[in-house]
Image (cartoon, rainbow, N blue to C red):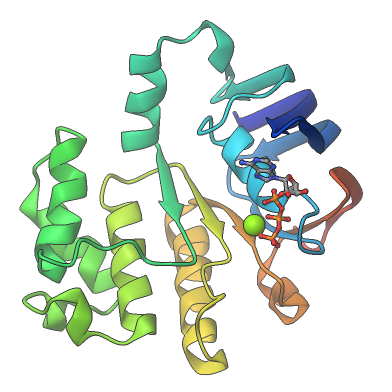
Amino acid sequence: MNIVELQNISKFYFSNSIVTQAIKNVNLLIDNGEFIIITGASGSGKTTLLYVASGLEKTTSGIVKLFDEPILGMSERTTAELRKSKIGFVFQFYNLLPNLTVYENVLLAAVIAGNKNEDKVKTALEIVSMWESKHKYPNELSGGMQQRVAIARAIVNNPLIIFADEPTGNLDSVNAVQILEIFKKLNKEFSTTIVLVTHNSDFLSYASRSVILKDGVIVHDEKIRI
Ligand SMILES: Nc1ncnc2c1ncn2[C@@H]1O[C@H](COP(=O)(O)OP(=O)(O)OP(=O)(O)O)[C@@H](O)[C@H]1O
Ligand SMILES: [Mg+2]
């Protein structure tokens, strides 16, 4: 199964009479089990590509398929369901809810997906080594720990794919490597497909495929290992 298929995608932004073409005629096939790292200069379209590929943003033209189905024909409700249960997101800023504990932050994602399963919350927190801190609040945690909780939240519903937009952008190198190791484990042990944007090309050693964007165009697309 193709997890994501982008066919001749273009994305324009229109703001204050300025038109920006963030993505230009991009084709991309993401297969089950890949670990793709996307790099490219600031403004090259990395975030836009993630948002379009995950159905968070509409394209201006072209076809986006998720799990072999074109999203154009899907109802809002179906795409929302997909985002809740089959797709996980991790962002640069962890976006945890400050008034909820670690445990409650992860449980909430399960509840929203209609899947209030406390065992899954425990498993997700154990995978990221945060079970011991389950009663803490986000402001009692380091940035690396908060990001680990954000990953637990992203995986609690067993998504087939995780999109991560500069998940280590705010972390020191030790914490950044811990986060990459978690993504590697998810990819290896649970076959979760990973699409991760980073500015750090040292992390390419974690990837099975390297995609480089320049001015909205894929200028490099290489399988690194099988
Ligand atoms: N909401 C928006 N409205 C108008 N222009 C936008 C919007 N979002 C992005 N852009 C423009 O689209 C282009 C691609 O932006 P995008 O955020 O995808 O780049 P990026 O590669 O993620 O950059 P960075 O590394 O800085 O995060 C840029 O020229 C940007 O200014
Ligand atoms: Mg970005």
